[in-house]
Each structure stands twice: as C-alpha cells, then as structure tokens.
Length: 315
Image (cartoon, rainbow, N blue to C red; front, side, top):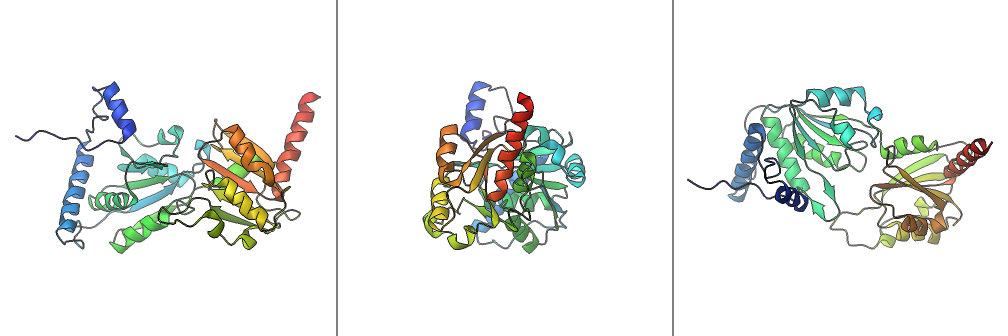
C-alpha cells in the first residue's frame, strides 16, 4: 500500500495545520466531490504532458456562473447572486469575498478558496480555468464568486473565453463594482453636470510580464482630463508614480482625491487629500489592500458633506 499524500498547502495553511493537526481540512482532506475533481485535474495534466492537450472531460457540461458579489457589504448582493449561491454544488471564491457574503452560500456547497494576493497565489489562473472546466463536466452547479463585478478587472473575461472555447456554457451575473459601491457609500457621485461629464476606470496593477515602468503604461494626456472622474483599482503600490504621471501631464495638484480601504465594510478607512499630497497621506495612514482611489472634482462633495456633518454635530 502506498502512503497517502495530501496536496501541498499554501504557507498560511501550513501554519494552521501545525497549530491544529486534528483539523482534517487544514491537512488537505477533501470531500468526495472535491477529491474526484482534483483527480480528474491530475489526469488531465498527465494527458497534456503526454501530448493530449486537446483531450478533455467527456459528457455534457453544466453551466458555470461567474457571479459578482459587490464591494463587500452583504446587502449589496443581487437577488440572482444570492439564489445561485444558495443552490450551488461547488463554489470557487476569491480573497476579497467577505465572510458575511460567504455565510450566505448554501450548506450543501463544497467551497474552494482560489484567492490571490501579492506574493501568495494559492492557485495560478490557468489551474482555476481547468478546475472550472472539470467541475462543469462533473454535472455540478458551479459558481465562481468574485468581488465587485466579475468583468471589471476581475479576470472574468479570461475565464469566459477559456470555458466557452471548450464548450462550457457560461452565465455572467453582474455585481456592483467597487467604484459605484464605494462612491455611493461616500455620497460622492461619479458624474455630475457641474463637476464631471465622464468617468474612467483604470487599474494600477500591471500583468506580471509587464515590466514597463508606470510612467510608460498609460496615456497620461487622456487620464489627466480635469472634466472627468478617474477611478483607480488596485493602485495602492503604484500610487506615488501614478499621481506623479497625472501631475506631469498637467492635472492640477489641488485636484480633490480620496483613497478608500475596505470600502462599504465595517473596516472601511478613508483618506482624502489633494492629488499632490495623496500618496504621502495614504502612506502616513498605512492604508492596505484593497484600496480604491477616486480622483476628480466630484470628490470635493465629500469634503462639503463632511463639513456639514461636523457643523451639525457641534450644534
């Protein structure tokens, strides 16, 4: 008989396992459905290594649902997202899904964490693609939970392309993207006839293979338009360079801006400052990921609202 060997665990899971060795899930044990799916994945990899890259699971595939759950506040879930979460057989979820949202998943569902953060990817994106493919061919109801909206900097488009190319039906369930949810929580309109006639979403995080410096990644003359609202996702680590690029392109250093960590949740933190001083203010406040940045004249309404509340409280 061969000894059982649990699949490798990420660093944090190893710590948990060493501290509580009687926790079977921490040691790598899986439900029967998960074990079967992982075994199919191992065999699929072996076939690809042997030259069978086109081979795949046989039989009809069930649908995969790419479900956005909003920026964190559980009450911002859509009715459709909640229904699919309660009925799912298998749920693959990201790092930014709040515990309150996960608690809404039906008790029958098998859960698999596939989150990513700087320096710690539990599973590469290519493996997530293959898992979705294999689970769908197992005839299960598969839900892929993503923070915000799955197609706004959520790699939902990549998963959609991969699955549809292999004959797997995919349904996208939109969620409230972080820009909309956080701006609403701050009572800052993203557009306003007196302040901004357009809004632009950009990411401050480049693909791993993109080695170009921040100064060369963007069309700064477009981003520095003072009549628009600029929203930067995943831009915490590059905020100093990003702000400098806007300033060099002519955007006024006094342009109102705000950075929000953990938006719409109980741990939300807000740092407002003019663009010229935003990076320093964020560093001094020790904001952490996930942090969203909103830049533009609409942010001045945040200060006006805050001043009004302070005056009312003082009275």
